[in-house]
Image (cartoon, rainbow, N blue to C red; front, side, top):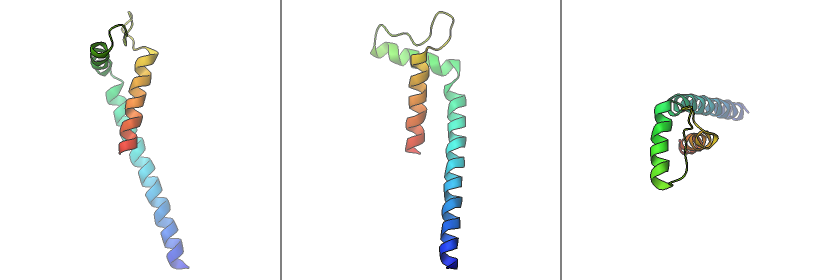
Length: 81
C-alpha cells in the first residue's frame, strides 16, 4: 500500500517538473523568438522561398502570419523537448 502511494507521489512530482520545465523553455523561446531581429530573419527565410509573402508590414510590425509561424516553431521545439 505504501509503495503504491510513493509511486503516485513520484508520478505527480515528475509531471509537475515536466510542466515547469516546459513552461520555462516556452518562456525563453518566446523571449528569443518574439524579438524584431527574429522576425527579420524569418522574413529573409520566407522571402527566399516564396516571392510575394511579406512577414513584416510597413509599420515594421510582424503580421499575423509571422506570429503564427513563430508560434508553430515554438510548438514544434516544445514538442521535441
